Image 1 (cartoon, rainbow, N blue to C red):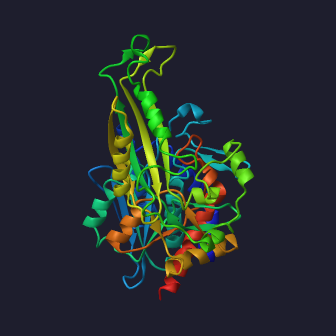
Image 2 (cartoon, rainbow, N blue to C red):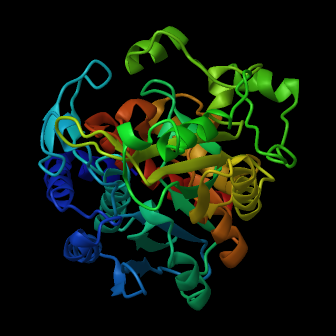
Image 3 (cartoon, rainbow, N blue to C red):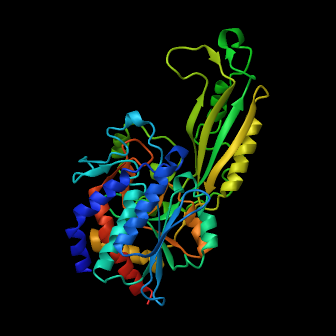
Length: 462
């Protein structure tokens, strides 16, 4: 391992330059206008794997964006790790809030990242983190030090629900057969407090449409006599939570897993500074479900949030219009035992039920995914634990995370393998937001740690 670490240190500048080139490609999967850039990014990832020494690299077509596959099988009798990541990114909107171009990566020092951070869309989610794996295996292969088999599956549709990944997995179960899936698309608590994610929330994502009159109307002539869809939609959305922050959709909490007080006390042992949390977000107070801490609200409790709302006239100046339609996008984060299809149906029924007769309502499901919990008493988890001790010098803390990676549950179902969620980003890295960034410390720490995971996993699986 020392030779591997020496190689990493000697090539850090090159690793960074390659990542910056990858970040320049706007691989936005949600917008068809970026289709060619998405394909270009897949080819970049494939070329990087080839140069790293990975075998059988291919850009596999799907009905949507391609999946990049590659492997290094050194001995079929050794355990096999499947590395999953995604090369697609979120839209950069709103562009005007970026301090530098979203696809013009720059390195700047911050209070949290005194050594510098890479500011660009996808730097943390997930190009920077997937590229750690590419460079880690390069370092291992360059020093003939790979202790187990490794496969790569890098997709281009994670940010739009991994629409074709399930099909690809089911059609390629033998190619993808493995003992564990290793994923770096999560975070650590802090750069001096390593952690390993042990649970993720699921997701139900819908778009709602409220229709009133058959055309936009003059608000002076018709205002007060006809339902305004925007007003109605706002009233309906406001009613989705009660005064205690509970979600009012009938049956929403029926399957929610309630953690014991002992489990909640253990969670509370993780360091968390609420004042620093508020300061970093520019808020004066936190808000959420009554009876739960901020950390619990964003990890072990389900949520319902409006992600976007629009309708009527939003151009320059004034236009006294009573709109015909209003729209909103709504996401619900789910906890273990909640089923995304069931929650989507419950929401749809509830939303239609609370709509007044003066409007018509349509709920359009987008995508969803199941929650996931990973055990901590397995060789896979212990390998990640030991690897972080090697590079951070302290025990990582197991933690539940509020985000969603729907394919974790899919992998267990289709590939019969658990996932290890060993991410290196920070929650403050502004993923999905303007000015997304990824610390240089975190990028390099990931490259240094991943080889130790393979080492310990191979030893524990003997």
